[in-house]
Length: 332
Image 1 (cartoon, rainbow, N blue to C red):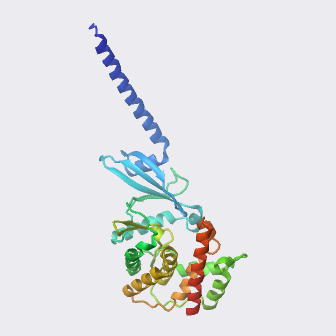
Image 2: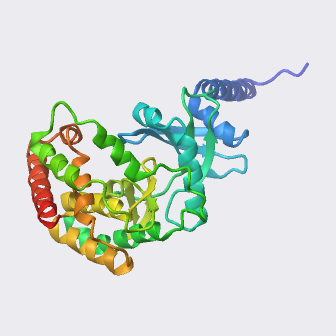
Image 3: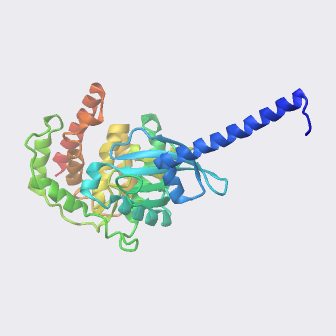
């Protein structure tokens, strides 16, 4: 038996402690991975992958959005997004996760600026409802009116590109019909109307002209094309996100909703420039735009106060909304 000197014995003990701590750390990490549902999501995509971090993205209303960072079997560090749809969307469409995944796959293949879809899980093994895993796109949302001149033409170009796609060629018949959706909304008049947004006045005007003439071929509609669903990087539109409201219908429906949202975010001049840019790109019939403007103006009725926490900002939006509907009514 070889007798170690004191220093050698100390080094040996220290070395053993390091090995022991590494083993314990690895065991603890493995245990935490097994108990972490997002670690299980990562392993569904790559069985050898390891979750490094996860955190929720703030600001989402209709879905729970979580950013994951993982190291794959190849050694690549990769970020991805897990989207879990909310109860309202699931009631409206129990297949919404599968529909969004299928739509994103078609649009990404067509070259549109959308996140690449990675994985669809409908097993309910990890979460109580289906979810999709999509590409994490580096970018930021922009609401600064001073930047509108650089952003608005790009927004119009991308919306026109969406509407120029052929839904039949992309096999998008599974999407809902937007006009039918509005038909169902008009069937029941709320017991209490939102007077702050002139809901009664809007509904009465629409009842007199509904349904609008179907002058334009049905197009793919994003359903909620507004600055909050656009990611920018280095001055360029990097991705159009949140496609759960996608439908087929008159492109004027999308255009009208974007007009109101741009009015609220950037002001009247930006809204007018957006409309001019879009019209220069799309040769369609714009006769029913005032009708769809009123539909867009009806969407926030009864909800605006839940969207905006600042009373002063809410009053400004109400004033812009009043101008928007007054103009639409004069053009009917």
